[in-house]
Image 1 (cartoon, one colour):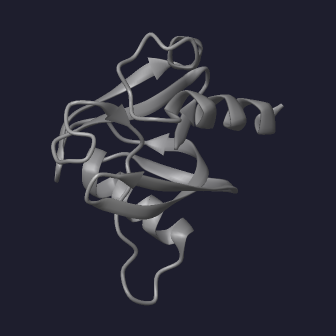
Image 2 (image 1 turned 120 degrees about the vertical axis):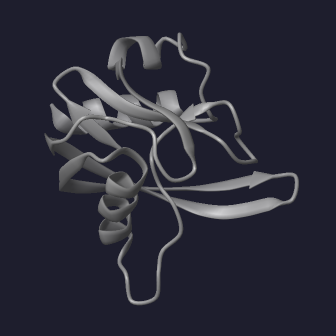
Length: 123
């Protein structure tokens, strides 16, 4: 997840299990890659945004019908780039952290909790 001041970058997923919902940029770890390196690569591929890793924030185990995966959460700080949709996302936008935490964005499960965790860690 990427923070820029009081904003967080989200992408609208094109593919199941969360097609149409907003979530954090991310994807599969490639051979020899760390979760942190994956986060930065996927961020650039999906949005064109460059960020600097700040800290790992743990992980979530995601289970949905026909899907099961581990989501490693990496807190990053915005460095440069204009958010744009690319790869397997329909849109990429900056949202107010307060709005995300308040549930004002139609998002994937735990996006609000992860945003709150990141803000708490940052303080």
